[in-house]
Image 1 (spheres, rainbow, N blue to C red):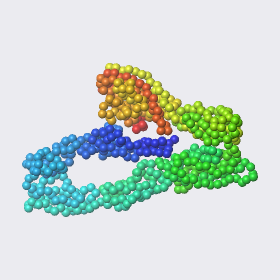
Image 2 (cartoon, rainbow, N blue to C red):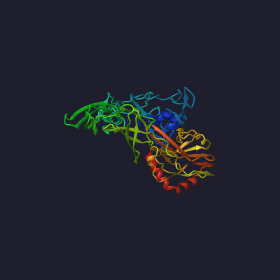
Image 3 (tube, rainbow, N blue to C red):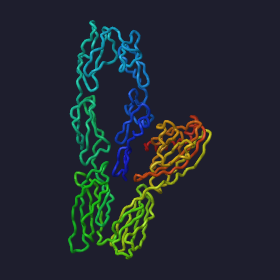
Image 4 (tube, rainbow, N blue to C red):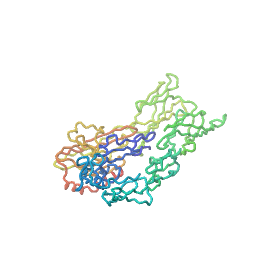
Length: 591
C-alpha cells in the first residue's frame, strides 16, 4: 500500500504535498510570543525577540509543553552602556543611571537602542571601533581604563594586541586588532547529488544540492553550512536510488495492458521497455516477438499493443536505464472475437456495456467477482452468477461491500475470453462505537473502556476522545473537525480533543482511559476537567480511504460537578497503572 509520510497529505501514490501546520496562526500552533515556520513534512516554532524557548533551543515543536519565556536581557553585561543600570521587563529591558552618573540628552528610564539618553561623566569617551570587531565585557572610560576587543562571528584575528587603554590626554590608544573574514572554500561533494548554483564560502553560507536523475532524497532537502571553524557541515540527508516497483499488471480490451508503480515521492516521466513474446495457436504464421518503448509520467500507465488474435502472449514490463525497476510479467490469450465493448461503471456498483450481438438475440453473461481489502487480509468475497439479456446495452448492479477492491470478470457465452475490470467501492460510516454509557457526579470522573471497532465498512484510521460542554451535546456534529487540542483553545466553550489513538495501535483487548489524567495521547493533552462544570464525553471513530473521510460518534459519559482533586487523581492513577503504561506506550508510537 502507499501512504503519505507524516507531515504530508495526499493519496500516497500519485501525490503527497506538504501540510501547512502554521495555517491556523502562530499563537494557535506555537503559543504566545512565537512565530510559526512551516517546513517540508513538518514545522517549527521560534520565539519572538525578547523571549526564548523553555527547552533552551532556538526552535521547538510544542508537543512537550515547551513555551516562550521572557529573556532577562540584563544577564548580558553592558546593556545600558557605561554608567547604566539594566532593569529587566517583559520582552525587553529599561536602563537607569548608576550612582555617580546623570542622564544626558533625555529622561530616565531609557532604552539604549531607541532613546538618546546616556549616563555620562568626564572621560575618554567612546572607545574606537574595530572593523568587524566588538568590545568584550564592561568597561569605563576613566583614566587608566582598558577595553578588550574580539572579532564578530564570521571573522577571526591573529595574535595582535586586543587591548586599548584610556590615556592622559583623554584619548584611547588605537587598537591593533584586525579581523579577517572566515572562508570555508568550495562546498564538499555529495554522492549522487549535484551542487546548485555557486554558493558563497563565508560563515553561515548554505550549499544546496539536488539528486541526480534516478535518485531522490527521502530525508528532505540536502544542504551544507559554512561553520565558524572554516569547514562545511556534513550532510545528513543522502540521495538514494529510485527503484520503480511495477505491480498489479492487468489486461483490458483484449490487447491493452495497464499497471501501477511506486516510483518514489515524485513521478517524473519514465521510459518503459515492453518485451512481447507471442506463440500462435496455429502454424500458418510465425510467432510474434517484439520490443516496445513507452514514456509516461502517470502513476497507473496503460498502453495498447498491436497483437495478433488467437495468440498466447507473455509481456514483460521494465524501465529503461538509468532508472532501475522491479519488472512485472503478465501472460494472457488474445481472443479471436469479443462481443463485449465499451464497459463502464456507474452508481459505483453498477456496470453497463455495449453488446455487438444483433438486436433481439439473447446473450448469456458469466460474472466472476473477487473482492479483497488491503487493510483486512482475512477478508475475501467471491461471487459467480449468470445474467441473460437480449439488450444491446445491458446493465447490472452488483451487491458489493464498501471499502473493497474488486476484480470483475465478464464473459459472454459467444466470446472465447472474458473481459476483466477493476472496481473500488468507497467506504461508509464505521460501525457505532461499542461503549458503556455512564453518568458521573460529585467530582468522580469516568474511567472509560475503549473497544476496537470492526472494519466492516472501511479501514479504521483513528479513535478520538472529545470533551465538550454539556450544553453542546444536542448541537454537536460528528463530522465536525472544529475541536482542537486543549492548549490551542482560548476557552473550552467549543470543547477539545483529549486523546487520539491510531487504529493500528488499538488491539482487540479493551483499553481504559481516565479522563483528566494529564497524559498525552498522540499529540493531544488529556487535561483535568474544570471544577463545577458539566461535560459530555464523546468517542469518535474515523475511517479514511481514497480521499474519503467518514465518522461515527457515540456519547460515552456525562460528567456533572467538580473535577478530581490531586489526591483523587493519584488514587485513580494507582488503580489503573497498567492501563496508563499501555496507553503511554501507544501514544509514543502514535507521535
